[in-house]
Length: 433
Image 1: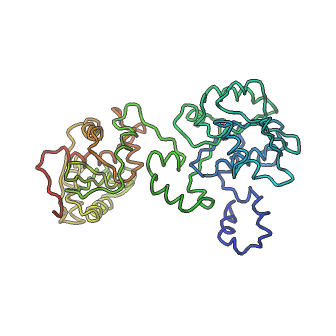
Image 2: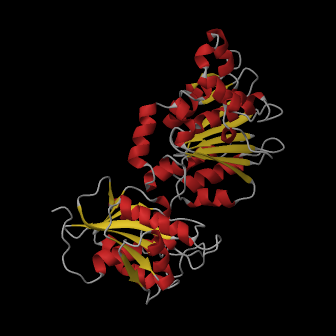
Image 3: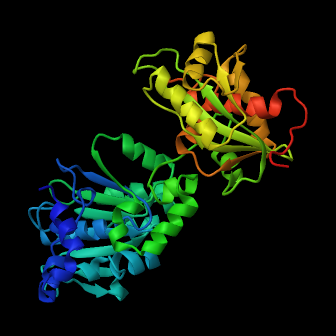
């Protein structure tokens, strides 16, 4: 059974265990830990641990330092005598990495626990291993000392980031193969992006939800409901690096400013369909986006239901289902690729659904520019978070998507908002009024 499976079984029936056995089980980190909390094999000079808030990054780093100081496999075969502990500030190292609930003092048994000497800013283990404390506020303090291992916590938040990192690298010169662990919630800073691209760096990722067993259920529910799918949530909960493309029509800040939880009463709702060019399962996705407009002329994006690898009958059925569920007024269908056949497929599913056919006369970028202007004018809202659609929006530039794929979600969004807000029509009547 894979590591962690037995632990899940025990957690489910923990009340049936003899209470005297629980302290013994709690010390078996190799038993309780998740796969992302164990050093990836083969061991590499740098282990980069990217995770959301409360994902267990501190415990991972502390257990790694413990294993290095005591020479416990799989961390090390022999004890590492000199270790650097580097955090954003001296207080952060003390309060989180050393004295925190998952810090170094909390995870050792009584006989192995190091002695914390605050005046000397160091920990000393019974076997003689020493960990010294450093702050990223003072890179010069790393000039001179030397180490065989280092733990850098919340690297993406460090002041003097590059200078402090450089000084630390010069100090890692003890032993045959100095090693280090970096635990951080990621941000799109150049150093993090460079480490992700380096072949000598092993990478582990964890989401806040992965550690939900050790977190308050109300906390997990609240932050997921409030931030799930947003740029902040993807960074702080999912441990993702989220950034803009320099020449994209949309920015993350623009979309976050447009976020809403519940849309108002809408005057008109449409389901936009951007069919794939081929019926093959390897074809592009079928863009399906639902949007509406309110009585004040503000657009509201309601759902991204884009399908991958769907055959014509499947995406047509999905489009009609969205039309019914949202009580929409029409399907807006791009017919450049399939012409009358596209409408015919939809009619086979439901002959009574009103279909508005649209044909692209300009390139995708030119079609998208007026819609992006609506966002810049604060005339569009997103009723929730649509991570994959928003990724396309914030990476779509004059040359298309960096991946080279068709922006199917974005195309459907553009068709929906163009039809609702930019096509000439009379002032819409509010439904139900």
